[in-house]
Length: 367
Image (cartoon, rainbow, N blue to C red; front, side, top):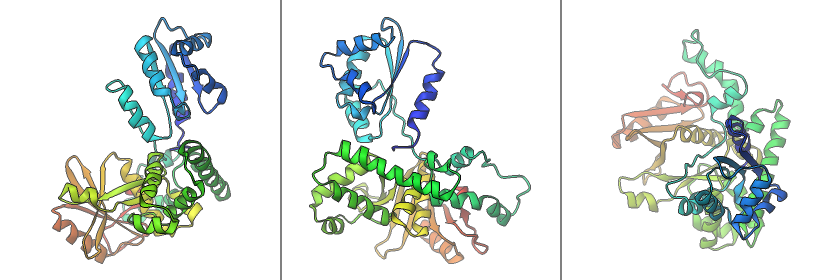
C-alpha cells in the first residue's frame, strides 16, 4: 500500500549494504524514469555506469516505485542475466509485482508485503511498550493501561505518517492526503479507466460498508455499470491494496470460492475519516488487520440463518474462531462457543472493545 514507508525501509537496507558499488533511484521522479526509456537495454547498463556503478563486480541497484516503468520486468531480467547485479525493488501494485515478475524472474526473487502498522508496531513508533507491566494483574487494570492508545489506533489507523502526528486535526489532514495520493497516483496514473469518477464513487461506497459481504449485483446497479466492469475495478482496488477480501469458510472448497467474500479497507483510520463509518465496523476492520499481520489464513463463517463468526483463522493447520463486538456479553460468548462446536473448533475467542466484566472476552490490544 502507498504510504506504509516502503521508501524508508528501502533506504535503511541501502544504508546497511557496506559496498559502495550501489545505486538508489526513485522512479516517481521523471528524471529517473528517463534512464529506463532506452529500447536497447545495454544503453541502460551504460547509464548505470555513468552514475558510478561498476558492472564488472557485484553491484546493488535499489529501485523505488517500479510500477511507473511498465517495461521494468524485462529490463531487470536482462540486466540480471548479463551483469552481477542484485536488485531491490518496491511498488504499490501487487497485481503488477506478483503476476508480471513471477513470469520473468521465477525462482530468483523474494517477495515481501508491507502493510500499515499493527498495534504493537504502533506502540513502538510512539515510544511505548506492548509488554504488560508485571503489576497489572487484573483484567480491568490491563484494560485501563492499554485502552487509550488502542482507541487512537482504531480511530486513526496504522499509517506511520498518521501515527507520528501529535494532534487529531493533523492526523485527519494526513488521512485525507493519503486518500488523495492513492486516487491520483494509483487510480489516475495506473488504472487507465474510462470513468475515474465511478471508481472514486466505488471506493467511497466500499469504505462506508467495510465488513459487509460483497454484493456484485447491488453495487453494479447503484453505480450504473456492468458486473464485469465492476469486477475489474474491484480487482484493481484489491491489487493496489485499497481493499482486502475475506472468503466464507466451507468444508467444500468449491463452495468457499463461489461464496460472496466480505471486504475490509486498507486502514481503519481511512474508513473512519473519509466515510465516517460507525465505530463497530471500524473496530472489526482493525481486528482484521491485526490478525492478518500474524501471517495466518482468514475466512468468515455464515449459516443460512444469517448467524456468523467474524473470523476463522487457520494457524499451524488448526482453526481458531474470533467474534468481534463493541461490548461482548455472556450471550455472545455462548453463541460463539455453540457455532465453534458445530465446526469442531476448540479455540473460540470473543473480542470486545469496551470492558466486559461478565464475559471472558479478549480486548483488541490482546489480539
